[in-house]
Amino acid sequence: MWLWRSSKKRSFAVSLAKYVADISNKFTSERGAVTVCLSGGSLISNLRKLLEPPYVDSIEWSKWHVFWLDERVVPKTHEDSNYKLAYDGLLSKVPVPSCNVYAINDTLSAEGAADDYETRLRQLVKNGIIASSSVTGFPKFDLMLLGMGPDGHVASLFPGHPLVKENKRWVTFIKDSPKPPPERITFTFPVINSTAYAALVVTGAAESVAVHSALRGTQNSPKLPVAMVSPEGELKWFLDRDAASKL
Ligand SMILES: O=C(O)[C@H](O)[C@@H](O)[C@H](O)[C@H](O)COP(=O)(O)O
Image (tube, rainbow, N blue to C red; front, top):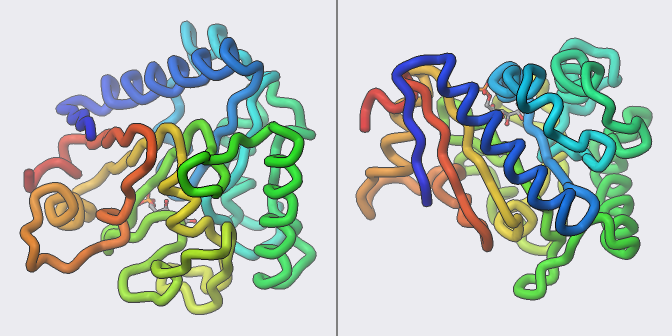
């Protein structure tokens, strides 16, 4: 595990952009594609430096395949949509082919959208776009960019919710999310923990208690979802000064 903490907002976003660009370049040169999973929340604005030189020019955007770790079950045009957030803030500004952007089917119910997303992922594993973990048999994405909520949730896996224990499905759904809106789909922990690279990108003082619990907690501390992120590959934390203030 690797931890990056910042005292300046600017260098935080630059370090994150460099990390994403380096991983992108590694996979696009090694296998001609990179699979990148996004979250909602503050992540997209934290990726803002990707839109500036040298990163914007060094990344082979045409080889990006973009997925969502979790998505709210709302139309793609809705203000709550994680797709819309990423499209407006990042994807509309870089040349990722639209056929490589895997949004949920927003005409389906939560259950239907989760089933449909999993089916599409299975097809992409068959086609070799998404790698497969020889250790777990679950899909092995190249890079997952995770946010974390003040309660320690990641993706739409919330503390104390039975979904944190799901160990068969790749994608599942929740209809009682404590963070609105209530209906979402989410990757499960076996998928998150099969990834090659994972970054936990956390900003803000409200998150500092959960950051402390995950990184410095004792055996008696409650096991937050964020503390269950334990990828097959490499995990890096990117913390701004406020999020790291209790460490
Ligand atoms: O759809 C969502 O709600 C997000 O994907 C969610 O899991 C997010 O990553 C965290 O809640 C952190 O959000 P902030 O970065 O805004 O704290």
